[in-house]
Length: 276
Image (cartoon, rainbow, N blue to C red; front, top):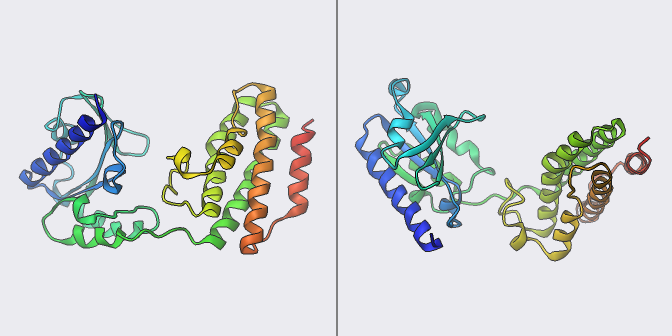
């Protein structure tokens, strides 16, 4: 399937969702989020939406049956985050929040800094009362993270989690150290790197579009922090990761005058270099 046809398939599915939502009186509003709403959808994009259900109809709203009208479902279940996750017959994924309209729509403005809807009127597929459109418009302006407090938070987080990494490695838990390095430490490194490079558009998923967003030097430093789950590979990656964290922290301190616990940083380096 070409990128163009896949985009058309997503556009068609969104148009069908709009049609079905308008025909179902139990729905007060529907709000899209994700790559389509920021103009980044491609052949691999999902369809993601909040379905705001009239409060007194929440219990009798059958999400899978409603979504099966979009296209046949190959999979439908409530995922670990409480979101209805589906896979359509063309392998397009979908994530749908089944949310009571009353408190749910009131919550939308609180997403500022976490969700960006540059075209809020396009993201709203249904709004029977006007509440959802008004709320979504408050997310139209991108709010980058405040640099000083964010840099301090991230450097402190990297210090704390890397010390944990050193302890885990000293215990010989290589698989756990591997997971900690890649799922906890790396995303925070990438956020600090993005903050320093003024590239915060993909803040919540900092690895997204990394290849386009960050310069070669940073991409190579990131690559040096990755490893297969083998003892020596993980230990080498952990030391490389901490060196990059310290370099990023020093750059942040020069720019924003944040506090760095230099003695503790040296102690962590010693732990990683002499784990036994």
